Image 1 (tube, rainbow, N blue to C red):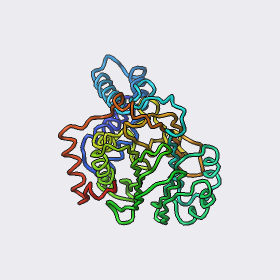
Image 2: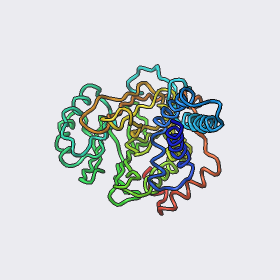
Image 3: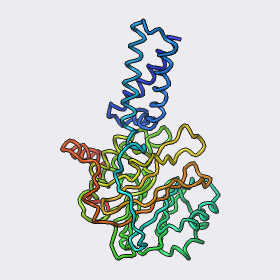
Image 4: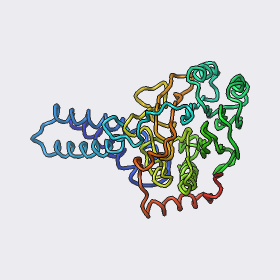
Length: 357
Protein backbone atom coordinates (compact mmCIF):
# COMPACT_ATOMS: atom_id res chain seq x y z
CA UNK A 1 0.00 0.00 0.00
CA UNK A 2 2.85 2.39 0.83
CA UNK A 3 4.39 1.97 -2.63
CA UNK A 4 1.07 2.56 -4.38
CA UNK A 5 0.36 5.61 -2.23
CA UNK A 6 3.83 6.99 -2.93
CA UNK A 7 3.45 6.51 -6.70
CA UNK A 8 0.04 8.21 -6.79
CA UNK A 9 1.39 11.06 -4.66
CA UNK A 10 4.31 11.46 -7.09
CA UNK A 11 1.92 11.70 -10.04
CA UNK A 12 -0.15 14.37 -8.28
CA UNK A 13 3.00 16.32 -7.41
CA UNK A 14 4.21 16.18 -11.03
CA UNK A 15 0.81 17.32 -12.34
CA UNK A 16 0.84 20.18 -9.84
CA UNK A 17 4.40 21.33 -10.47
CA UNK A 18 4.44 21.15 -14.28
CA UNK A 19 2.28 24.27 -14.89
CA UNK A 20 4.70 26.29 -12.77
CA UNK A 21 7.11 26.06 -15.70
CA UNK A 22 5.70 28.59 -18.15
CA UNK A 23 6.72 26.55 -21.14
CA UNK A 24 4.12 26.53 -23.95
CA UNK A 25 4.42 22.81 -24.77
CA UNK A 26 1.01 21.15 -24.82
CA UNK A 27 1.92 18.58 -22.16
CA UNK A 28 2.70 21.32 -19.65
CA UNK A 29 -0.16 23.59 -20.62
CA UNK A 30 -2.67 20.73 -20.55
CA UNK A 31 -2.00 20.36 -16.83
CA UNK A 32 -3.95 23.61 -16.33
CA UNK A 33 -7.12 21.79 -17.32
CA UNK A 34 -7.69 19.07 -14.68
CA UNK A 35 -7.11 21.17 -11.57
CA UNK A 36 -10.55 20.32 -10.19
CA UNK A 37 -9.99 16.61 -10.81
CA UNK A 38 -6.53 16.76 -9.23
CA UNK A 39 -8.00 18.57 -6.22
CA UNK A 40 -10.56 15.79 -5.77
CA UNK A 41 -7.94 13.05 -6.19
CA UNK A 42 -5.58 14.76 -3.75
CA UNK A 43 -8.36 15.06 -1.19
CA UNK A 44 -9.21 11.39 -1.59
CA UNK A 45 -5.54 10.45 -1.33
CA UNK A 46 -5.23 12.38 1.93
CA UNK A 47 -7.98 10.21 3.38
CA UNK A 48 -6.20 7.07 2.13
CA UNK A 49 -2.95 8.17 3.77
CA UNK A 50 -4.67 8.73 7.11
CA UNK A 51 -6.65 5.47 7.05
CA UNK A 52 -4.26 2.96 5.54
CA UNK A 53 -0.73 4.19 6.26
CA UNK A 54 1.20 4.02 9.51
CA UNK A 55 1.18 7.49 11.01
CA UNK A 56 4.19 6.58 13.12
CA UNK A 57 6.37 6.42 10.00
CA UNK A 58 8.13 9.59 8.82
CA UNK A 59 7.54 8.66 5.16
CA UNK A 60 3.80 8.75 5.81
CA UNK A 61 4.01 12.33 7.02
CA UNK A 62 6.15 13.24 4.03
CA UNK A 63 3.43 11.89 1.74
CA UNK A 64 0.73 13.65 3.77
CA UNK A 65 2.46 17.02 3.58
CA UNK A 66 3.21 16.68 -0.15
CA UNK A 67 -0.39 15.68 -0.91
CA UNK A 68 -1.84 18.43 1.29
CA UNK A 69 0.29 21.10 -0.40
CA UNK A 70 -0.90 19.90 -3.82
CA UNK A 71 -4.51 19.83 -2.61
CA UNK A 72 -4.51 23.41 -1.33
CA UNK A 73 -2.53 24.74 -4.31
CA UNK A 74 -4.96 23.21 -6.80
CA UNK A 75 -7.94 24.32 -4.72
CA UNK A 76 -6.70 27.92 -4.82
CA UNK A 77 -7.09 27.98 -8.61
CA UNK A 78 -10.61 26.58 -8.80
CA UNK A 79 -12.16 28.00 -5.61
CA UNK A 80 -13.24 31.30 -7.26
CA UNK A 81 -15.54 29.25 -9.49
CA UNK A 82 -17.56 27.92 -6.57
CA UNK A 83 -20.56 29.52 -4.80
CA UNK A 84 -18.52 30.23 -1.66
CA UNK A 85 -16.55 32.92 -3.52
CA UNK A 86 -17.87 36.51 -3.81
CA UNK A 87 -19.42 37.51 -7.13
CA UNK A 88 -17.10 39.35 -9.48
CA UNK A 89 -20.13 40.59 -11.43
CA UNK A 90 -23.15 41.92 -9.60
CA UNK A 91 -26.53 40.29 -10.12
CA UNK A 92 -28.95 42.39 -12.14
CA UNK A 93 -32.43 43.20 -10.92
CA UNK A 94 -33.34 45.29 -13.98
CA UNK A 95 -36.21 44.12 -16.17
CA UNK A 96 -36.04 46.71 -18.95
CA UNK A 97 -35.49 44.71 -22.17
CA UNK A 98 -33.84 47.75 -23.75
CA UNK A 99 -30.96 47.29 -21.32
CA UNK A 100 -30.59 43.54 -21.81
CA UNK A 101 -28.44 41.43 -24.11
CA UNK A 102 -28.67 37.64 -24.31
CA UNK A 103 -26.15 35.38 -26.05
CA UNK A 104 -25.90 31.67 -26.82
CA UNK A 105 -22.36 30.48 -27.46
CA UNK A 106 -22.36 27.02 -29.06
CA UNK A 107 -19.54 24.85 -30.33
CA UNK A 108 -21.69 22.66 -32.54
CA UNK A 109 -19.06 20.03 -33.48
CA UNK A 110 -18.64 20.11 -37.23
CA UNK A 111 -19.60 16.45 -37.75
CA UNK A 112 -22.73 16.77 -35.60
CA UNK A 113 -25.91 16.68 -37.69
CA UNK A 114 -28.38 17.62 -34.96
CA UNK A 115 -29.03 21.21 -35.98
CA UNK A 116 -32.67 20.82 -34.91
CA UNK A 117 -31.59 20.69 -31.25
CA UNK A 118 -29.78 24.01 -31.50
CA UNK A 119 -32.63 25.62 -33.41
CA UNK A 120 -35.02 24.44 -30.71
CA UNK A 121 -32.87 26.09 -28.02
CA UNK A 122 -32.81 29.33 -30.00
CA UNK A 123 -36.60 29.24 -30.27
CA UNK A 124 -36.90 28.50 -26.56
CA UNK A 125 -34.45 31.08 -25.19
CA UNK A 126 -34.80 33.72 -27.92
CA UNK A 127 -31.23 35.02 -27.62
CA UNK A 128 -30.24 38.33 -29.17
CA UNK A 129 -27.00 36.75 -30.41
CA UNK A 130 -26.16 33.21 -31.48
CA UNK A 131 -22.52 32.40 -32.16
CA UNK A 132 -21.68 28.97 -33.57
CA UNK A 133 -18.21 27.48 -33.61
CA UNK A 134 -16.99 24.59 -35.80
CA UNK A 135 -19.85 25.44 -38.18
CA UNK A 136 -19.32 24.62 -41.85
CA UNK A 137 -21.40 25.15 -44.99
CA UNK A 138 -23.75 22.33 -43.98
CA UNK A 139 -24.48 24.04 -40.68
CA UNK A 140 -24.91 27.36 -42.46
CA UNK A 141 -27.52 25.85 -44.73
CA UNK A 142 -29.43 24.30 -41.82
CA UNK A 143 -29.36 27.47 -39.71
CA UNK A 144 -30.73 29.57 -42.53
CA UNK A 145 -34.20 29.11 -40.99
CA UNK A 146 -33.10 31.40 -38.14
CA UNK A 147 -32.53 34.35 -40.42
CA UNK A 148 -36.18 35.38 -40.39
CA UNK A 149 -35.92 36.11 -36.66
CA UNK A 150 -32.19 36.94 -36.62
CA UNK A 151 -31.73 38.94 -39.82
CA UNK A 152 -28.20 40.21 -39.14
CA UNK A 153 -25.36 37.76 -39.60
CA UNK A 154 -21.67 37.22 -40.28
CA UNK A 155 -20.81 33.89 -41.89
CA UNK A 156 -17.46 32.18 -42.10
CA UNK A 157 -18.10 28.53 -43.06
CA UNK A 158 -14.96 26.40 -42.94
CA UNK A 159 -14.41 22.64 -43.01
CA UNK A 160 -11.31 22.69 -40.78
CA UNK A 161 -13.20 22.70 -37.44
CA UNK A 162 -12.80 26.48 -37.16
CA UNK A 163 -15.79 27.80 -39.07
CA UNK A 164 -17.78 30.48 -37.25
CA UNK A 165 -21.19 32.11 -37.65
CA UNK A 166 -22.89 34.91 -35.77
CA UNK A 167 -26.64 35.55 -36.00
CA UNK A 168 -28.24 38.59 -34.39
CA UNK A 169 -31.64 40.14 -33.75
CA UNK A 170 -29.91 43.47 -33.22
CA UNK A 171 -28.16 45.51 -35.90
CA UNK A 172 -24.40 45.83 -36.00
CA UNK A 173 -21.78 47.64 -38.03
CA UNK A 174 -18.06 47.53 -38.89
CA UNK A 175 -18.13 43.75 -39.07
CA UNK A 176 -14.76 42.15 -39.81
CA UNK A 177 -13.55 38.57 -40.13
CA UNK A 178 -9.93 38.54 -38.98
CA UNK A 179 -7.14 35.98 -39.04
CA UNK A 180 -5.03 37.46 -36.27
CA UNK A 181 -2.44 34.73 -35.71
CA UNK A 182 -3.08 31.73 -37.96
CA UNK A 183 -4.17 31.95 -41.59
CA UNK A 184 -7.00 29.42 -41.17
CA UNK A 185 -8.29 30.40 -37.71
CA UNK A 186 -10.85 33.23 -37.93
CA UNK A 187 -12.31 35.58 -35.38
CA UNK A 188 -15.31 37.87 -35.87
CA UNK A 189 -15.56 41.46 -34.65
CA UNK A 190 -18.25 44.13 -34.92
CA UNK A 191 -20.04 46.96 -33.11
CA UNK A 192 -23.46 45.88 -31.86
CA UNK A 193 -26.23 48.38 -31.21
CA UNK A 194 -28.31 47.58 -28.14
CA UNK A 195 -32.00 48.45 -28.07
CA UNK A 196 -31.16 51.57 -26.06
CA UNK A 197 -28.79 52.75 -28.80
CA UNK A 198 -25.54 51.94 -26.96
CA UNK A 199 -22.73 50.55 -29.11
CA UNK A 200 -20.89 47.47 -27.81
CA UNK A 201 -17.62 46.08 -29.14
CA UNK A 202 -18.17 42.36 -29.82
CA UNK A 203 -15.33 39.88 -30.32
CA UNK A 204 -15.96 36.20 -31.13
CA UNK A 205 -12.96 33.89 -30.88
CA UNK A 206 -11.98 30.23 -31.26
CA UNK A 207 -8.20 29.79 -31.18
CA UNK A 208 -6.64 26.37 -31.75
CA UNK A 209 -5.66 24.44 -28.60
CA UNK A 210 -2.23 23.15 -27.67
CA UNK A 211 -2.47 19.43 -28.37
CA UNK A 212 -0.65 16.65 -30.24
CA UNK A 213 -3.19 16.88 -33.07
CA UNK A 214 -3.28 20.70 -33.36
CA UNK A 215 -0.47 22.98 -32.22
CA UNK A 216 2.39 21.45 -30.27
CA UNK A 217 2.56 24.62 -28.18
CA UNK A 218 0.05 27.10 -26.77
CA UNK A 219 1.86 30.08 -28.32
CA UNK A 220 -0.70 30.63 -31.10
CA UNK A 221 -3.71 30.39 -28.77
CA UNK A 222 -2.08 32.60 -26.16
CA UNK A 223 -1.07 35.22 -28.72
CA UNK A 224 -4.61 35.55 -30.09
CA UNK A 225 -6.22 35.84 -26.66
CA UNK A 226 -3.66 38.20 -25.17
CA UNK A 227 -3.50 40.42 -28.25
CA UNK A 228 -7.27 40.88 -28.10
CA UNK A 229 -6.95 41.59 -24.38
CA UNK A 230 -4.33 44.27 -25.05
CA UNK A 231 -6.61 45.88 -27.62
CA UNK A 232 -9.83 45.97 -25.60
CA UNK A 233 -7.95 46.97 -22.47
CA UNK A 234 -7.36 50.40 -24.02
CA UNK A 235 -11.00 51.29 -24.68
CA UNK A 236 -13.59 52.82 -22.40
CA UNK A 237 -16.40 51.42 -24.55
CA UNK A 238 -18.58 48.48 -23.53
CA UNK A 239 -16.93 45.22 -24.61
CA UNK A 240 -17.90 41.55 -24.79
CA UNK A 241 -15.59 38.69 -25.75
CA UNK A 242 -17.06 35.22 -26.15
CA UNK A 243 -16.27 31.89 -27.77
CA UNK A 244 -14.51 28.59 -27.28
CA UNK A 245 -11.11 29.71 -25.98
CA UNK A 246 -9.76 26.14 -25.80
CA UNK A 247 -8.55 27.07 -22.35
CA UNK A 248 -9.98 26.75 -18.87
CA UNK A 249 -11.25 29.65 -16.80
CA UNK A 250 -8.53 29.29 -14.15
CA UNK A 251 -5.47 28.91 -16.38
CA UNK A 252 -2.57 31.35 -16.19
CA UNK A 253 -3.33 32.49 -19.74
CA UNK A 254 -7.00 33.19 -19.05
CA UNK A 255 -6.12 35.01 -15.85
CA UNK A 256 -3.60 37.12 -17.80
CA UNK A 257 -6.31 37.80 -20.40
CA UNK A 258 -8.60 39.09 -17.65
CA UNK A 259 -5.87 41.23 -16.10
CA UNK A 260 -4.79 42.87 -19.35
CA UNK A 261 -8.28 43.32 -20.82
CA UNK A 262 -9.90 44.50 -17.59
CA UNK A 263 -12.91 42.34 -18.47
CA UNK A 264 -14.98 40.55 -15.86
CA UNK A 265 -15.92 36.87 -15.59
CA UNK A 266 -19.58 36.41 -14.54
CA UNK A 267 -18.88 32.81 -13.48
CA UNK A 268 -16.74 33.87 -10.52
CA UNK A 269 -18.76 33.08 -7.40
CA UNK A 270 -21.49 31.38 -9.42
CA UNK A 271 -19.98 28.16 -10.72
CA UNK A 272 -17.74 26.59 -13.32
CA UNK A 273 -20.36 25.99 -16.01
CA UNK A 274 -18.26 23.22 -17.52
CA UNK A 275 -19.14 22.95 -21.20
CA UNK A 276 -16.71 20.24 -22.36
CA UNK A 277 -16.79 17.19 -22.55
CA UNK A 278 -20.46 16.19 -22.82
CA UNK A 279 -19.73 12.44 -22.69
CA UNK A 280 -17.36 12.39 -19.71
CA UNK A 281 -18.89 13.97 -16.59
CA UNK A 282 -15.73 13.58 -14.48
CA UNK A 283 -13.56 15.12 -17.20
CA UNK A 284 -15.41 18.36 -17.84
CA UNK A 285 -13.90 21.82 -18.06
CA UNK A 286 -15.12 25.38 -18.74
CA UNK A 287 -13.81 25.89 -22.29
CA UNK A 288 -16.60 28.14 -23.58
CA UNK A 289 -16.42 31.62 -22.12
CA UNK A 290 -18.02 35.04 -21.99
CA UNK A 291 -16.15 38.04 -20.59
CA UNK A 292 -17.49 41.58 -20.46
CA UNK A 293 -16.59 45.07 -19.34
CA UNK A 294 -17.84 46.54 -16.08
CA UNK A 295 -20.67 48.28 -17.96
CA UNK A 296 -22.71 45.08 -17.55
CA UNK A 297 -24.22 43.09 -14.73
CA UNK A 298 -25.47 39.54 -15.12
CA UNK A 299 -29.07 38.40 -15.06
CA UNK A 300 -28.63 34.77 -16.08
CA UNK A 301 -25.82 32.42 -16.96
CA UNK A 302 -26.66 28.84 -17.71
CA UNK A 303 -25.28 25.71 -19.34
CA UNK A 304 -27.88 24.50 -21.81
CA UNK A 305 -28.80 20.88 -22.69
CA UNK A 306 -26.72 18.91 -25.16
CA UNK A 307 -27.24 19.45 -28.87
CA UNK A 308 -25.29 16.38 -29.98
CA UNK A 309 -21.93 18.16 -29.83
CA UNK A 310 -19.06 17.41 -27.47
CA UNK A 311 -19.72 20.88 -25.99
CA UNK A 312 -22.78 22.12 -24.14
CA UNK A 313 -24.04 25.54 -25.30
CA UNK A 314 -23.63 28.43 -22.87
CA UNK A 315 -26.46 30.95 -22.36
CA UNK A 316 -25.76 34.38 -20.87
CA UNK A 317 -28.06 37.33 -20.27
CA UNK A 318 -26.40 40.61 -19.37
CA UNK A 319 -27.86 43.97 -18.39
CA UNK A 320 -26.30 47.25 -19.41
CA UNK A 321 -25.91 49.04 -16.08
CA UNK A 322 -22.97 51.46 -16.36
CA UNK A 323 -23.85 52.96 -12.97
CA UNK A 324 -22.55 49.71 -11.41
CA UNK A 325 -19.12 50.00 -13.03
CA UNK A 326 -17.46 51.45 -9.94
CA UNK A 327 -18.78 48.58 -7.81
CA UNK A 328 -17.30 45.83 -9.99
CA UNK A 329 -13.64 45.03 -10.24
CA UNK A 330 -11.78 42.10 -11.75
CA UNK A 331 -8.13 41.11 -11.71
CA UNK A 332 -5.51 43.86 -11.85
CA UNK A 333 -2.44 43.78 -14.07
CA UNK A 334 0.99 44.66 -12.73
CA UNK A 335 4.02 45.80 -14.72
CA UNK A 336 5.29 42.23 -15.11
CA UNK A 337 1.89 41.14 -16.47
CA UNK A 338 1.95 43.87 -19.10
CA UNK A 339 5.48 42.97 -20.14
CA UNK A 340 4.54 39.30 -20.38
CA UNK A 341 1.53 40.19 -22.54
CA UNK A 342 3.72 42.22 -24.92
CA UNK A 343 6.17 39.34 -25.21
CA UNK A 344 3.37 36.85 -26.00
CA UNK A 345 2.11 39.03 -28.87
CA UNK A 346 5.63 39.76 -30.10
CA UNK A 347 6.49 36.06 -30.15
CA UNK A 348 3.90 35.55 -32.91
CA UNK A 349 4.49 38.93 -34.54
CA UNK A 350 0.93 40.12 -34.01
CA UNK A 351 0.03 43.66 -33.04
CA UNK A 352 -2.84 44.79 -30.86
CA UNK A 353 -3.60 47.28 -33.65
CA UNK A 354 -4.58 44.33 -35.85
CA UNK A 355 -7.65 43.73 -33.67
CA UNK A 356 -10.70 45.54 -35.10
CA UNK A 357 -12.05 48.03 -32.60
